[in-house]
Image (cartoon, rainbow, N blue to C red; front, side, top):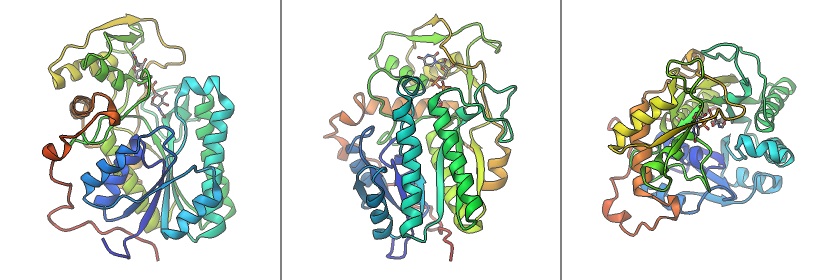
Amino acid sequence: MTENTPSVLLTGGAGYIGSHTFVALAEAGYQPVILDDFSNSHPAVLERLAQLTGRRVPCEKGNVLDTAFVAEVLQRHRCVAAVHFAGVKAVGESVQQPLMYYRNNVSGLLSLLEAMAGTTACRSVVFSSSATVYGNPASVPIDEGFPCAPESPYAQSKLMCENILASLRASDPSWRTGVLRYFNPVGAHPTGLIGEDPSGIPNNLMPFVTQVAVGKRARLQVFGSDYPTPDGTGVRDYLHVSDLADGHVAAVQALLAKGESFTVNLGTGQGTSVLGVVRAFERASGRPIPFEFAPRRAGDVAQYFADVSLARGVLGWRATRGIEEMCRDSWHWQQRNPDGYRTQTSDTAMHMPAPVRNSPNGPMRPVVSA
Ligand code: WQD
């Protein structure tokens, strides 16, 4: 790493997807810079990132809504691009607290863009969107041309952000925006040093399954057994968080190299049912996952998976890790950190894997615009 290593701002970089993207960007030759208020993340992640990457972890504590602060951070680190993760993300909660969702998600993006526009030459931004913008699709696989029909304030807030980025591009073509519509990110870094650390009772399937496996919860409730799917349970496109992180690196590289904006799905293109996840997890962990069938969860759709051809064409990216690997790495993370980042890790140094290095062929060269 040199003084000329290009810096990339990661708002919400201490969170689940942000932290994995930190590692992937560092491996690809960038200097990621975290901006996070730790409202839904834990400062212990910073130490883990330093262990994993073998380098310093620049972190600016603060809220993305503070435009002057964001501008100062962008300037001081001379960022060439920003990846915007910071936001709130629970669909159910967004129905209860819509204003909080619009304030954080929509105003958060506006604040970042105003900070970029007002004070720096940095015009490249990758935005963390969600497949939930498609609502209940007429068919699967879902491609990017499908109509957007958000069904919750959370989904609405993501679509509003996409529209803000489109207006900005139309007003000034020097803006380069990469919108990434994630399907269902799961898994953890294979070392078990970083992973998902939900507070309270997990809403999502995989963290719930891992907590059943480790004995924190008695059994999984499988929501719905009569969907028109092969085994009657809901089908989703689960995506390893390391593949997702690699997708962000590809997005940053594409924006800086080609300068063309894009909106792409990030998924595997493969659907897995709830029972399919349970079976894969049992194989990966060697533990039984007790479950019972429960009524369908309000708002759930039967099946959902991505057409991933555009991401392949535009970014040269595709997911390489399957459901077995996702379950194995989720399990490893859960076992090693039964209480997430609150787990005491006095033995970390002893069991520390070698820091992740760049490939033997030398570091990948980051692509930076002139
Ligand atoms: C997956 C499947 C459930 C829990 C959500 C958001 C989406 C995106 C990803 C951010 C479904 C079933 C779940 C449980 C179960 N997030 N299930 N028992 O709903 O596809 O997507 O997370 O952008 O926006 O909506 O993911 O993990 O909650 O559910 O049977 O205890 O597991 O019914 O079929 P979902 P999920």
